[in-house]
Image 1 (cartoon, helix red, strand yellow):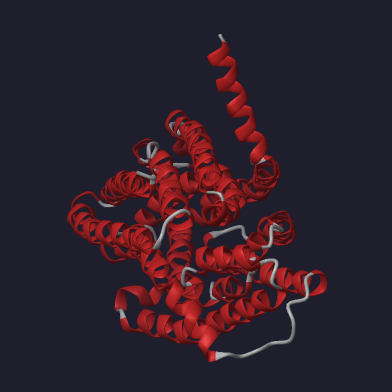
Image 2 (image 1 turned 90 degrees about the horizontal axis):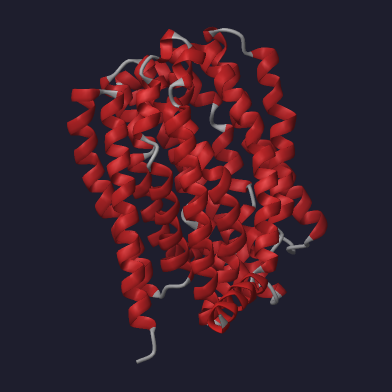
Amino acid sequence: MVSIIIYHVGKLTSLLENKHELADTLYLIVLQAVNKLLPIIVLPYLLLHLGAAGYGRVMFAFAAVMYCCIVVEFGFDLSATREVAQKRDDVRALNRTFWAVMWARTLLLFATVPLLLFIVLLVPAFRPYMPAVVVMLPMAVGTAYTLMWMYQGIGRVREMAVINTLSKFLLLPLIFFFVHTEADYLKAALLLSSVFLLTAVVSCWWLWRRYPVGRPQWRWADVRRVFSESVPLFLSRASTSVYTQLFVLILGLYCTQEDVGRYTSAEQVMRALCFLLYLPLTQAFFPRISRLATTDRPAALRAMRQVQWLVVVAMLVVGAMLFFGAPFAPHYLGADYEGLDALLRLLAPAPLFIGLGAVYGQMGLVALGNARAHRQFLYVYVAVALLSLVLVFAFVPWQGAMGAAWALLISEGLVCVLMFACYQHNTRLSRPS
């Protein structure tokens, strides 16, 4: 009896240690729910009114421009967040980091947008998507100057969540007024991308108003340093994009726009539900675990275990929703989406793989780990990306959208298993002998 009481007191103490992060998580889940409410309402509206072909064009453009976003982010969403969290009490060092990251993102933006447009023009199968790609480009600009990494690092993630939510509430309802037929797909693409741009403008304005970061300063040494520190994280994110965005582009080569629309709608529904619960947890806990990793490692490990079990419960709920709700999707959306239920059921285990893979990777290897762990984080994603390319080129010509879904599920499962193995290995090595 005494041991049970001690156990539960220990659990309560662990919760109290992270009460700020838990409060942030609950706050962010509520905001994220509101934040996702409009997209969840807008998604079936777009599926119905654009049809599989129109929706496929929009999602192809989204996937293409997302490559610009991945390059522009360059892993700063993790590396810069970690550095800001560690330097938040040193104003001068914090300002130098801020401007180094801003200049780095600006350089990447000006390099990637022309390259993307050239590639779309170069590949004949991609040219029909060119108008949608062009009107989706504000998403890349918005990604470059949205300051989530800064707000996370200084512990003001709630403010960034409010800004993001308000931007969606201002722009996404316009879809119901301007998008009515498949011919309106460009309007849909422009409104979706403008959310990113508005979020960036407001986040920059609010930061300058409330948290002075000093005058713009250019130091090439600082820019080069933040680049070098983010290379492993960027390569891992670029590797991840192989079985997220690149699968959509490969489908565009082999399949019809309707197939692209069915696959992307299933993946979008799955990821929307997944990130509704996972993102608030990682945004609240990642900065704390990063700080504790250098000051109080036992507390960091306790926080890591806590977020791990929270993610397991949340992702099991999401998987159940996908599996049991799948039969209703094609019935509601119509003949264009026949087979969507099979895709959703196949992808039902993916949220658990995605959530745990991200916990063991981002928090276990990046936030808690050393340079060796950071390299392992990269190696896992590169290895899985190479395998996923083999899978998608083998499965898509044979099974179309279902083949892409199988390749995605296997890839996410492998990431989860390998990240867990690397985390366990590094945890054993770091224990005192």
